[in-house]
Length: 374
Image 1 (cartoon, helix red, strand yellow):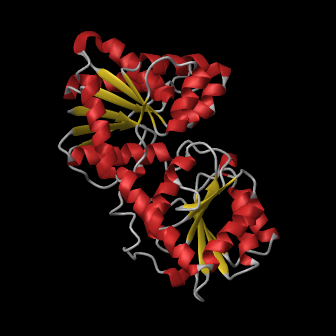
Image 2: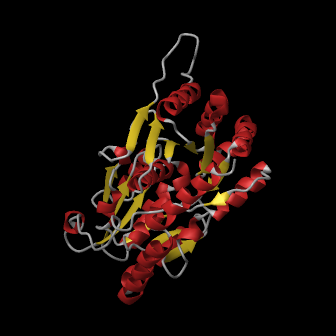
Image 3: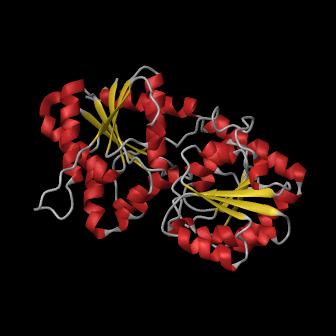
């Protein structure tokens, strides 16, 4: 197949999944064209059968904001004509699915198919905004195929947007050969020279991720046992988190590491992953942690319970239950046999249900189904 994948190039889950999907499909012999406004960070290395196309957006005095969606649609049309693309896979309903729909209409009788994958914020945030509601609903209903990354997101999309069509659930995935606790590419002593326990959190530091809760949970854990905290990512709440760390006297024990392209290296340094989010449509980073053999302390919201099994691969609590999360973390870190059991179960769940070798063929099969649908 000749497939166009449209995605954001950033460190968020959708960009990661789209990039890894492209590589996986290319390895299975398909020709994949990644289309974005810059090269996704996971595709900075050469991959056979993966071609990168950057969308150029010119500025005109007439426009206050550059018309990216229109430039993207035009790019998709030219790529389809040049390379004979059979299918456009848009990650996110806005603007990517809209651009794919427009490109399909511009191409007319060429038979181009479009698939939209819903990742979360296009529904949980943008879908609730009255200025986007109708266009998101239209994009979903006009796509030849639609997938959601969790059963939670599938049902919420149907409920919030009154969607009548079928939405296929294809979970996010992880390369468990790369996220693997047996690979030691990080020197733990660099962060914990005296054998302290290491907690880790990675996100885009948006308010929904509740980074301040991570710091407060760590503070309670550190009062009981020697510990360090690794904070990975960038975003609007980083400054407030830094202020909180300083006010609690934790500066010597907390490391702000910024954005990291290859998180698997840091996962192998840590003992526990903390994700106290207010909203998660899936929780890809929690899956990456589990594949690395890290139990997860998180919240029982959204699609996260589809990833983390409470009392088996991690512990889930109500949003904002800082004391409970800290207590759960301490229970695991102080009880080596229980911790080892959780660690083993976390790895096993990632391998059994979410390995890329299991999930990518589901996309491949769905593509073929849509192409054969007439």
